[in-house]
Each structure stands twice: as C-alpha cells, then as structure tokens.
Image 1 (tube, helix red, strand yellow):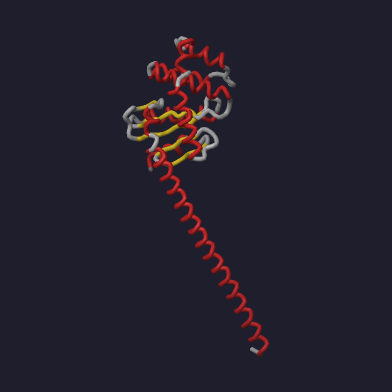
Image 2 (cartoon, rainbow, N blue to C red; image 1 turned 180 degrees about the vertical axis):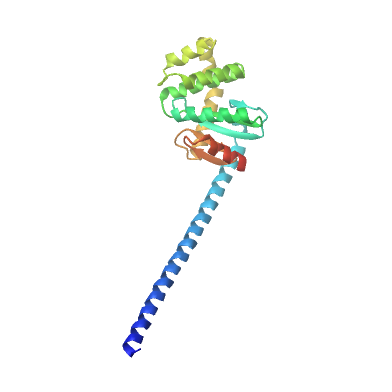
Amino acid sequence: MNKISIIFLFFLLFFVNKNSMAESFTDSTKEINLANQQHILNQYEESKRSLVNDLFKNNKSLFINSPYYGNKNGRKVIYELFDYHCIYCKSIHASLHDMVKKDNNLKVILLDYPILQKTSLVAAMYAYAVFHNYSHEQYMAYHDALFSAPKPLTLEKILELAQLAGFDAKKLDQMVDNPQTMDYMKSVYDMARALELSGTPVVIYNGIIIIGAVPEQKIQTIVNES
C-alpha cells in the first residue's frame, strides 16, 4: 500500500469515526435534554397538583354546600365543573354517571361554572336554589333536564322546566335571589380563576386537572392510579 493510499485511508477512518462520535454525542445530548424536560415537567405537575390540593383544602365549606351525586360519604371524590350550555359537559356528565354506577365509593361534586351564555348563570342559580330547598332527587331531575333541553336556554325555558319538575316558579324566584346563591357562584368563579380555568368541562381528581371532553377510560385510569 503506497503513502497516498495510507493517508487516504487514515482520513477516511478519521472522518467516519468523527461523524459517528458526533452522532453519538448528539443522541446522548437529546436523551439528556428529554430527561431534563421530563424532570421539569414532572416538577411542574407536582407543583400544580400541590396548588390544587391546597386550594381545595381552603374551600371545604364550598364543597360541603355544593350539589353532588354518587355516594355522599364516598372516599373517591371527583369535582366536575360545568356549564349547562356546554355540549362537551353533557358528554363528561354521562361518563361520570356511568363511573358512579360501577363504583359505590365514588362521589362527584358538581360545581357550576357558567361562562358560555348569560342564561348559563341564570340556569345555574335556579338549579342551586332547587338543590338547597328541595330533595336531592328533585335537584338531579332538574339538573338533568337543564342539560337535556334544547339550547340556547332562555329564562322562559328555565322556568318552564322548573314548573314541569313540580316547583313553584314564584317561590323559586325568591329562593334564587339570596346571598347564599351569589356567594356560591362567586366562590366557584374565584377558585376557577386561581386555577386558570378558562373553559368547560373540567374534571379534578386528587389534585389532577382534566380539561375537555376526554374518554371515560382516561378518567377511570387516573382515578385508579392516583
């Protein structure tokens, strides 16, 4: 082998090894960056979860006075933020009802978060008045009727559904116009803003926030693993 061939072979091996080393270094750097990103993400999630849990501990009085379904004394507690005009909320609501049927240790606390229409707030206030002045069964019937009614809801339709459920519209008007209802609405709004929630539906379990119309199985997995 002559000198030219040896030199050529040397440079060929050098550049091949150099490229291989560079690729290996790049791959290692990518793995380190991904690991760092995941670590930062995990820290953020833990921080967010801690914030949610602290916020919920400070709002126990709100949850005690909130509507619910499932086992009143259930140890697994899901928080459902919804708007009666939200079609995706209706889907999530059906999924959570299905989960409650399968698990008698599950409790779902309903938190009215009316943000889509002016009458969303009106419907929420009437439903909350029904919850505090009538039976749990009557509230759930009215709640489901508001979800099932054609949209958009009008004041006339909200009152019509109340009358069909057997409520006196005039008495219900008086029940709606009270500080307790307004305090409840304000408390939910304040909590949602603190969590930077700008839409519905929202499901919260053990500090984990689930936003949007997600499959029932995803919620069930989070409940099982958290």
